[in-house]
Image (cartoon, rainbow, N blue to C red; front, side):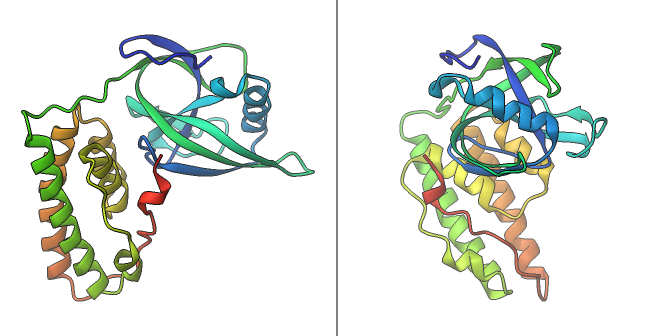
Length: 234
């Protein structure tokens, strides 16, 4: 049961391994077709609305589909709170969930269900900077991201030019940029695992400088999907 999420507390929750990284605040749509995850949805719907949560954690090795597809998971994931469920007559579901609290995976737990469950520890969302420092870092990231977005638009990534302006909240900026940049899973996971907002923003400055340089050196890029706007955040 998800229950109250106090930093440092532990809980046993269902876990949904995915080939992507979910960050707090991001909207996550899912199409459910495997029998084990149909059972997960059925079990979640039997709970009080505030307890309908499951952990999303990125796959380090393996694949999403199949009984033995996942061989290793990353250590840090994000709780997804179920917001909307659309059932199909054949037993499939379309889900809408929102990223909430981050957690650290402690161990897998066999609770007798076909889907994975695990004991997790809830992580803090720390500011991490001195007075005013996080705001300065957030502004620096926003400026660099605007430049990066413009460079992508020049090489054909038209979705980048359509992304709305970043908000003022440094924590929200740190997560929006983490999902909007064109990064591999390892880099995105590393941003999720940052201990504080300030650490995440510092890491993003380095990544934005690196990626902007790479874009400048490439004559053209295929269009990429950056259609993740602040409206996707809580």
